[in-house]
Length: 394
Image (cartoon, rainbow, N blue to C red; front, side, top):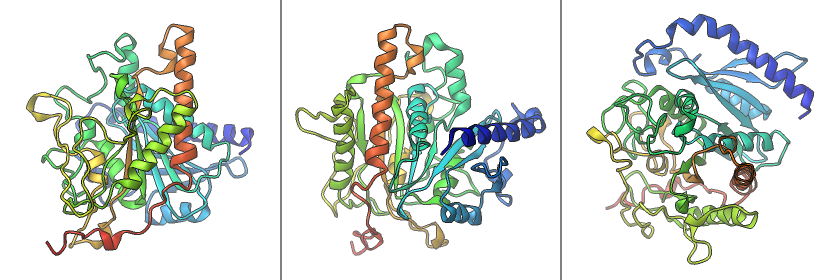
């Protein structure tokens, strides 16, 4: 992609956002109901802007037809996933692959974890250079921009236990614990999660994208305060009844990425590469053999009123979905990796020059592993629909 074309495209996209922001400015701060109220019968919550053509950006409304067109055209596309509760744009990018396989990369689920957005944005810059990834991929650099903005406004608290910007409001549930029940599809009508609570707008936008895009694999970029647990971890895939489908290839993909990070000077102790390489997060239940019932971790951060408990994206995505009422919602278990970057701060947040350089390198190599391993032809998923009912006769 030529630099001039990219610059013209970004200018055009910014102009589009500016034009729409004045009309929506008065809506900021107002109480909103769940997403279905605003997009249930109107899919214009998703505004796509294609790559520059003759110095003009084409705009497409996100729908099944629009998504089909994007996948058929296979052009690099920057688009607006939707708007946050405070009407900030939630940016996303589509990059074509060499196969029909699809992947999703997400940053900024927790606003405090600013380094996760840096990894995602660095990945975007790498992909803009025209790499040949196997997977057609959508990259969301910051899913919760409001929360990230709050964290940036409190720069001295970044990385502290104050967690300023992690949650959307004082009694909000953990953003990573707002998923539907395992084996169940996202219900846009109710907008409720496994706990019966309303799913935040940003997560509803994400879930709707997953419903339509149906990626085979997901990389969810987080960051971790205790850097000794920095690593790449896999959730074991199961059928809709939580019976294991096998963990070997999920684990192998995560370890392969960790090895690349380590080889290029990255800090990734959580995978224990020098001892017994693992893709198991230290708080998660041990993966079981195929055909056995897989326990899950339904508890996250310790918060009042069980706000830290619920279903994570890792658990929901890695469980196959079967909906007898609407078979179009059915999907196989998705391969999902959780990337825990060492520390919450962006390189720019460090005062020491050596620390800036060190963490710039960490961001670079973590993004490199996503580009060169996760999006390439490693442990490519085969259709497992026949395997998603291993417990059907139990």
